[in-house]
Structures are given as structure tokens and as C-alpha cells.
Amino acid sequence: MKMTFRWYGKNDCISLQTIRQIPGMTGVVTAVYDTPVGEVWSNESILELKKLCEENGLEMEVIESVPVHEDIKLGRGDRDRYIENYCENVRRLGKAGVKCICYNFMPVFDWLRTNLHTPAADGSNSLSYNHEEIMGLDPKRLSLPGWDESYTAEELTSLLEAYKDMTHEQLFENLVYFLKKVIPVCVQYGVNMAIHPDDPPWDVFGLPRIISNAADYERLFAAVPENENGITFCTGSLGAGRENDLIKMAYDYAKRGKIHFAHLRNIQYSNELDFREVGHYTACGSLDIFGIVKALVDGGFTGYVRPDHGRNIWGEDAKPGYGLYDRALGATYLNGLFEAVEKLR
Ligand SMILES: [Mn+2]
Image (cartoon, rainbow, N blue to C red; front, side, top):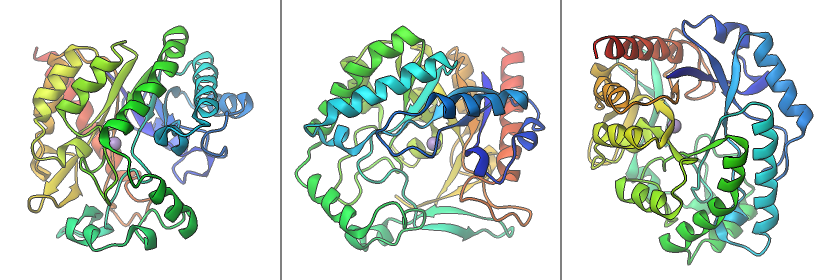
């Protein structure tokens, strides 16, 4: 296991000097942020990022993410151009020493929350999801936290229109089409693809979602069986689906070498569908983080780990989910779990 920390590049208010002081941190998970989705990242940008990391004693072996252009998800006529650009990014990143690329295949929206600052009794605050609130929203007039600046109203309307008749099967076929072209490049350049699960793991606004549960994973692994076609095991995202047995999935997919990257965090259920994000410690929420770590270790997991979303604590007012303090606490807790489980085996 290699412990990592997400870093949003030079504009991140958390510096690499700070990240390296978190015990056990081997590297950062980052991306080139100044290139439009679908275009090729410049070698200069990639190598500059890598240099910054290395000057601070940190590796840059995981990229989160190389986003997938909507035209690839929609299977539009120009998808081959965008897929070739994606392949070129894989080549360039592979040459720069990157071993793992996290990406997702969710139409239009990736993670969805209804509140970024839900207060807890202890005075901290965190992200939360309320299904009724989501259902009451008009996606074309969305003012959802975290999403306000992503698209103009016109862009959003035409995108949603384009997805109107898209079925789960069509979206899955488009994913397979994409992977069949990208994975051979990954094999050649020693890069693993790690698809992030849907967050939350169900359809929202009528948009199909296809990476939500064990059946979806089996279909994905069967369609593109190469080891390089793997997953980001995100406990907070998958865990929002009450039917997902995270311990079984962690063990099973680790055993099969499918988990290239793990996002570990805890959530607290408030009813059948709603949840809020909590501290990483098992006792803070609804997920058995100890059981999940043990299952990963028992399954022979050797991939990258990062603490996922943290709360705002100690007066910090950070990018939602991505403050320093609670994620550093999370990393330390997770390192302790891994050490104990590994030594007691
Ligand atoms: Mn995640």
C-alpha cells in the first residue's frame, strides 16, 4: 500500500511542504488543471508538476483525473479524436512515471451533494446528500453546491438533451469502446486505469449510471479483462448504496488485482438514501473502515490509497472535502489500521 494525498496543484492552499510532513505520505494525487477537457496535456505541464512533487520528496504516480470528454460518453461522431487525445495523455503520463489514472464515466455530473457545510454537534461541518432535495431540483436550472460554475445554463440544457434517450446499455457500450482503445496503450506504457464509482451510486436526474454495484463491476471486468482495466475503490461513494457489501467487494476485487487505487472515507446514513460525510474512524459513521482495510490486506492489495473527503475542523474553511486537518487525521488513522492489520496477519 502506498499512502497518497490529493493535491490541486500550485493553486491549492495546502502546500507540498505541508503534505510531506504528514507521516507516511509517499506521494500526491494530482492533475494538469489548465487544459480543457478532451485536449492533450503539454509535456511541460506534466513534467513541471512532477518536478515540484519530487523537489518536495513526493512521488507523482497517480493522476486524478484525466477527465473523459462528454462526446466519448455520448458516443458522438468525433469521439475517436478525443479518445486518441486520451491515449496520448496516457503515453505522456506513462513516460513521466505515472502508474495509475483515476477517471469516471458519469454523464454530466460527477459527485452530487446538496450541502457542503452541514454542521455536526461537535462544531465541525461536512458535505451531505439529501435525496428529496435533489428530486426537487430542475437540473437545467441547477444551483447545486460545487457545480454552479461548471456549465452555462445553455450548455447544461443541450447536454441533458443529448443524454435524453441514452440507456444504461448504450452508455456501457460507449465505455467499452473507449477502454478497448485506451487499455492497449496502458499495457504498453505500464499505466493502470482505475474507474471511480458513481457518487451516489444510483441514477440522478434521469441520467444513467453504470458503475454502482457488484453486477456493474462484473460486467466491466468481463468486457475488458486486462489487469490494466481496474477500479478506484471509493468507500464513500459505493457505501452510499446500502446494498453494497464493501468488505466482500474489497476482498474479492483486491484478490483479483482489480483495485489499483482506494479512496477511503466514512459516511453516516440518516435514512434509506441520505447521508453525511464524517470522520474516517469506523465509530464515526456507518461503514466498517477497519473491516474494509482488513479485507484489502487479506486480498493482497498493493495499490495506492488516499484519505478521501475530510470535514472542516479546527476553524479551517477549505475547498469542500479537501481541507488539510481532517484528511491528515484520516491518513494517520488509515496508516495505523494498515500497520496493525499487516503485522497481525
Ligand atoms: Mn472518491
